Amino acid sequence: MEGNNLWVRENLCSSSIKLNWWVIKSLTLDRYLIIEANGGLNQQRSSICSAVALAGLLGATLVIPRLEFHSVWQDSSEFADIYDEEHFIFTLKDFVTVVRELPEEIMKTYDFNISSIPNIRVQAWAPASYYLGEVYPVLLNQRVVRISPFANRLSMNVPPHIQFLRCLTNYKALRFSSAISNLAQKLVNRVTEKSSSYGGKYVSIHLRFEEDMVAFSCCLYDGGRSEKFDMDAIREKGWGKKFKSSGHVISPGLNRINGRCPMTPLEVGMMLRGMGFANDTPIYLASGKIHQADRNLMPLLKMFPLLQTKNLLATEDELAEFQGYSSRLAALDYAVCLFSEVFVSTQGGNFPHFLMGHRRFLYNGHAKTIKPNKPKLALLLHNTSIRWDAFKNEMQSMLAEIDKKGTAVPIVKKSRRKASIYSNPLPECRCLLESKNISSAFMLKAAE
Image (tube, rainbow, N blue to C red; front, side, top):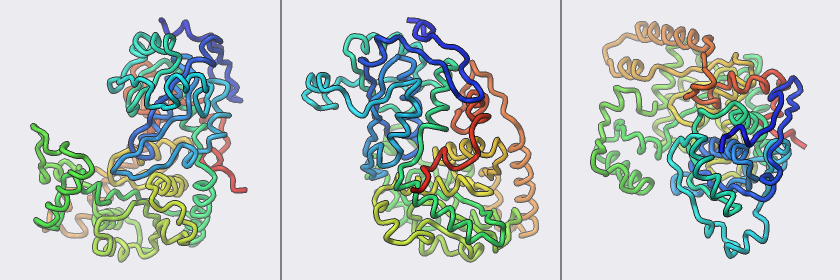
């Protein structure tokens, strides 16, 4: 079936974001899509956005996505624990019908067990044509399809009206739950108050130096044989035999030269001081539990004594309901970083990927992000004979280059997009960008 046969539509975007959208009525209410979103907070977010797009493509009703529990992230949160479920359903209602659960007659067919519904395994980045040719007939025949895992299972290159559903979901429909929003707003207010000498402006740093990240990177620091033994054990516990498979070579030295190693707090501090950030710069540090924090965090604190974290800004009672839920804690960090004057990304991954796009969306493309040239930085940090003045010159040149790249508008051909709308909202999400009100409301539910 051709995708265009599924749709009758008019102007996709207008200044009021009032879209005209019709799907064949016989498919709207009695065909259901179930997906299981795997990974951490933002990988799950990506899956949710793609699930809405796929439901639109297939003309299916979407069941609220299920969040998969993973031994690494150790988070048993459900959709409503992280996102405002009512807002999600309401925002999408004119485009994709979303329900909380399958009808009883379908559940009865599968003994009221979602896992009994046959699972369709889909290749990574499957094109729209695959879903229309292979999955759509199953949907018509069985009334329900389940796809797990669903991370990265829909191509970024989809028709514009389907891509728009990703935009709508990411930038409008996905709003954090009340519990997360209320505390996040308090943290933003508190870090702003503590930055009063800078007009309420602060720098946020996303530091990926948690134990699992250090282990996954296969990089070595200064812990010797003991560190290597510990990291091997963590890798085996979290990822099984993945790192021992044939053909997988662990090369810490090569990883470091290629800029793939997570930056230490010391390295982050040296980079920022070299770029010209003074020691009284207000800093918000977004991170999980830092690997050997007592030893590793001290140098950064000495360089930036006004450093704040969610643990310092919130009381124990306020954080109590978040403890043990890595995605909810990450959501708090995400919200505070979103409203910072400068965002510093120290490692790749979905967190900075989504955050950079959200900041571009929120500030009409004018959001300062520092994403260092890590291979160059690794060489400079490895050079023990370099003088501080020379290092500073290199850092300031790097910052100038980052700023230059940041002002460039990426050219994306709609029919050839390979990059992500989550990090670069334009051009597909332009209508949302032009119509939105500049406020935190699109991310945070207003405190009641």
